[in-house]
Image (tube, rainbow, N blue to C red; front, side, top):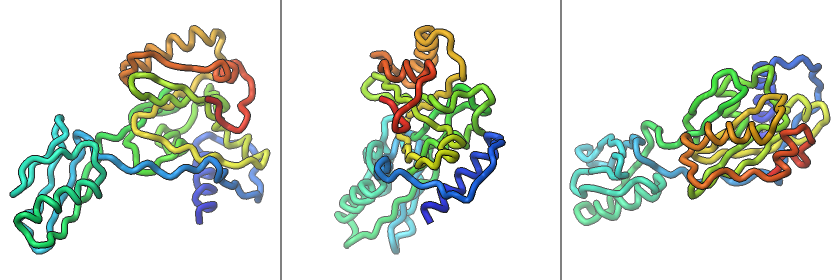
Length: 249
């Protein structure tokens, strides 16, 4: 089933990317060494959640997490929901309600998700911000952006991940056509909240000038205050050198 899922993604992306190569009967496999478990989904400001308590319909409520990260519920008042998983929030609500209800059975679901986003910019047909699913791969984000343009450098797609005001750039090889022809594995690149994918053009005359322009684009979006780190290996990839193993840090 997992192989079928990835094979279906390949066919879908192949149509978007206007593949001209002949298909074969070979099956694309997943590099399980690159697979990491999805990070637990964490609630944030702006998310809407629905809560219900078994046999207490009067306590059912749909609320939006306010800018301070709080929600307000009957009987128990304000709760800090931002930064919690749905399971953690459910337990917190259960504990507080247990003061008034014997063994309350609480259900918490996300109604609207707005706090988790990824960005896809550069040489894609529909750049923009997209809601991050609980388990989104880089291929999903490229599909949401309607695939690469004809000028895209699919061998050196940049993944920018921001932590503590510092952006770190990785270079990903997303040339699925090439990997399919060579019978290589399809890496499992999982995205995190506020990841930014930037697809550079196939030709970059001056890498340093390109990076300065990229920094001006990324800094206000990702709130990067301490700058962006890009290794010499990533610079070499942007100059046309191959990526070994699919990703360079």
